[in-house]
Length: 292
Length: 158
Image (cartoon, rainbow over all chains, first blue to last red; front, side, top):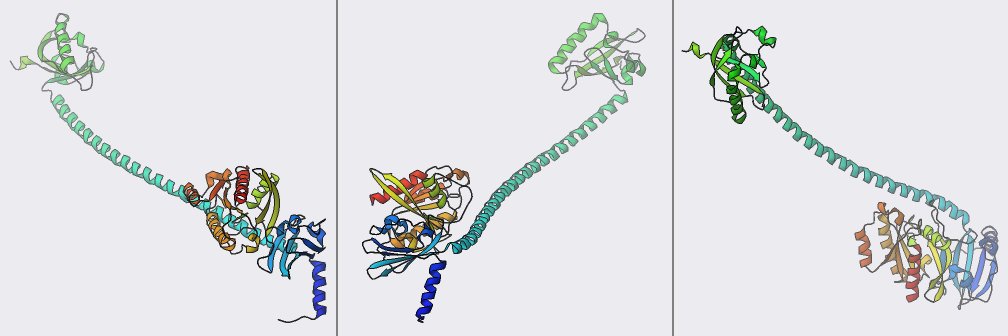
């Protein structure tokens, strides 16, 4: 360890005292303050009484006297004036020496750097929290999309099944209609559609021929049930309608129809309610006189 | 006052000593000492509060700052899980340096409890270790008086 000349040591002491607001204290082993001096004003250390316990006026000494370890260093202690002091304590024989050196500028620089570092740390934490939240939301959204996609796929599958079923039904219907049309257009028997209000809505040529009407009469709405039915035999129709309402069809019977020219004709007559209807009927007639 | 940085140590002291609070975070360098008289039973005692700068760990925590401590408030930020780890490290450091002294855990920022990362299970674990835990909010004042009073009582009991 190099030994400095007394002139250097003295200069350094003067420089330190002048530029770093040096304060010195001496404290007895019983805690009594016996010496105080230096730039006390810089740290707000006014009216500190000698001969009393040092830690009553100087709180940073409370609990640490007598020193367990010497020397001891308390860096950056902010004082009541706002000035920051580096505080050194060491044993000087029986007594404890304390010096305070101004560290305000150094503390400010450190504070600026530390503030930057801590702000950055807090920002990083906020960023991580936001990322976590976004990840949770993303996972929830993906789960929702997956669930919806599954539901959509199921609905789509059901729709395809329903469309296939419908196409099958429509095909069966078309086939059934074709078969019915073939029967109707063959005119082997008379066929007509009639609702219970008395209107004949559709009829094939065999039926129209049997009652002496033509297609124009049908289209013109000139054929009504009551105009081709004998009033005195209407009760037979009523019985048949009642039976039809009960079981969907009635037992065919020979009915006398009034032809357009007023003459009478007897036809075997049967009818059934159309599926799902209580009004619409499909009827067939057969001219039995042709078979006798 | 011990704990990681930005957990609210300075804010708790300001709330307790001066009944003020500011949202702006200002990091502490070194230590700032405040005094607050407190009534413990029939005795009025002066609490000397050393508000010590916080860091992520204990590497920069100076043993000279805690040398004469009679007890300490171990502050955790409820919204930052990592500050609990720091609290464990600090407690172990203090225990090693100056032995077992009374302390109270203040889980701060109770006004932001919906954002807490510290879970009830973790809090239960602290209590199970025999640690005194107090939820605090320097912002609202919730639990602040209780935390310091409890600490003062524990110190006086010793």
